[in-house]
Structures are given as structure tokens and as C-alpha cells.
View 1 (cartoon, one colour):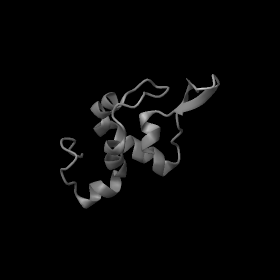
View 2 (cartoon, helix red, strand yellow):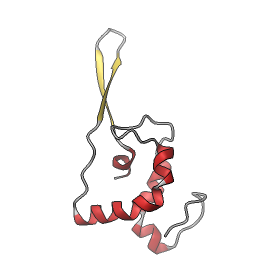
View 3 (tube, one colour):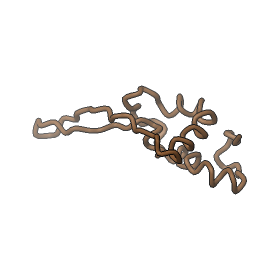
Length: 94
């Protein structure tokens, strides 16, 4: 298992190779809107150690399927609406 304390803590070469998503997780915006699954960055972090190995297996098997994007609309200055697709945290990692 990997240590999930400080992101500055060094991992072994094997852990870095096996879990590149570990580093990309900490690059995500922590206050971003949750996706369709409703899970925020903080909620995903609580289960990160459990989820990364499973995510890695799904990616290697080719069985990973992204969650559909949550559709939100932003009103533009001229009154029209612009669609936004908000991805789930796990999809942003992949």
C-alpha cells in the first residue's frame, strides 16, 4: 500500500510506476464541482488508497468506463446558455 499523508513524501519506484494517478489526484482542483456521482475531491481522498489499485486493474484490463458528465448551463452576457460538462473525480484522474 502507499502512504497517503503528505504529497511531498517520496514513494518507491514501484509505487510511482503502479500508481501515477496518485500524483495526478493532488493536481486536481480541490474545490471543483462534483460530477454526476456527487463525490467531491475530499470524499474521494478518504477512499483513495482503496480505489487506486482497483482503478489500475480496470485500466489494464480495459474494463474502465467513464461516468457520464454532469450537464450544467452557464448564462452568457447576451442571455444565451452555454453547456458545461462536469466530470467525476475518478474520470479526471484517468
